[in-house]
Image 1 (cartoon, rainbow, N blue to C red):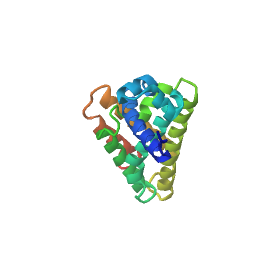
Image 2 (image 1 turned 90 degrees about the horizontal axis):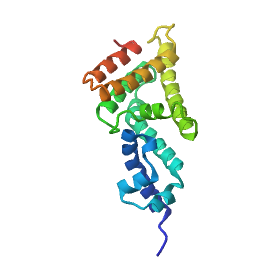
Image 3 (image 1 turned 30 degrees about the vertical axis):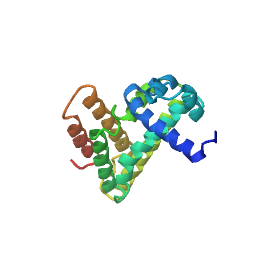
Image 4 (image 1 turned 120 degrees about the horizontal axis):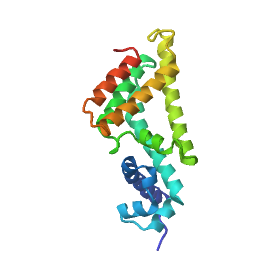
Length: 199
């Protein structure tokens, strides 16, 4: 039997990762064992191991792809906006849309992963922390641009704006999912706009 091309293997790996993202958003990254995912996808365990190597490599691939899905949903629509306050407003709108439209079946993937790994050392924790830090730097940079343009008070710390936006989005996701608060995202959007001086 001829070997599959590298492109075919990559496509197959990508389709497995996409399915695993949805499962992990509900059950956590620790919930996507090789055996569980093989059963869900009706594949052999050896077939999955062949694509990833081991469980941790698979989990890290899923996390990276989930972060890319978030980036496509939240950053890509906003990056076309003018830097500073217009871009922060666009980020807030895209972030709320991302949460409302269920880009991940289990809610905010990064919030789930952050809670899952905040006290669990290892490569996955490092990956989650790096992703959160990178996003906070983006938010802080846009807040700095807004302050330099005079759209935020000079005493408003960009790092505080970034921290508040991130915290509000995480809290809004939890309130909507866990507490069943139907107005959670409305409140979250209002609070996020207030954090950037737009309410």
